[in-house]
Every structure is written in structure tokens, then in C-alpha cells.
Image (cartoon, rainbow, N blue to C red):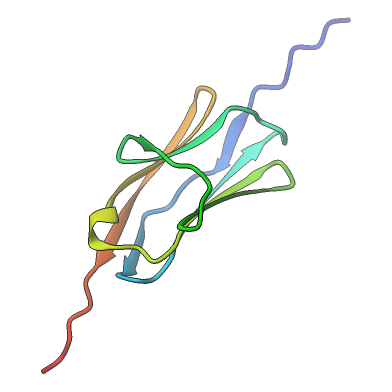
Length: 101
């Protein structure tokens, strides 16, 4: 018999995140089944890549995590996770720190 490949689904998607300048923001998306390929993260339409500031990781082949370190005000925008035809998006709001007089 011929088994169709199980269609991937998003078990839990990205959630809107508010952080202060200089903090780190973490976005998590859980997929099923494990091992979904062609995974890409975007911030306001710009593809993100693993580096010192942007940490992209995967756990058990299902839980995909993006951590943006030391965020600045201009990092505010829409974070998008894409795996094949699946898409999940959430807002990142970076808040300035008000210095009290």
C-alpha cells in the first residue's frame, strides 16, 4: 500500500511578545510531525539567519525557537515562521526604558 506523507500542522504558533530594549525576545512554534524541512524565520520580510544576535534552534525536530538578543527599538515588527506552506506570525514590540528623573 502507498501511504501519503502525513501533512504537517502547526501545533502551537507564535505569540505576540513585548520586551524592553536590550532584552531578548523568544518566539516558539511547534510543528507536527517532527522533521519538517524548509524552515525559515523572517522579521518584517527579511530572512533571519543564525548568528550572535539571532539564535535559531530546533528541539526534537518539532519545536522551533527563534531568540533575538539585545533587541533595539528598530527590531519592532512582525516575526514570521514559515515551514513549507505553513505560516505563523506574531508581533514583536520593543519598548524603550523610561529613565526617571
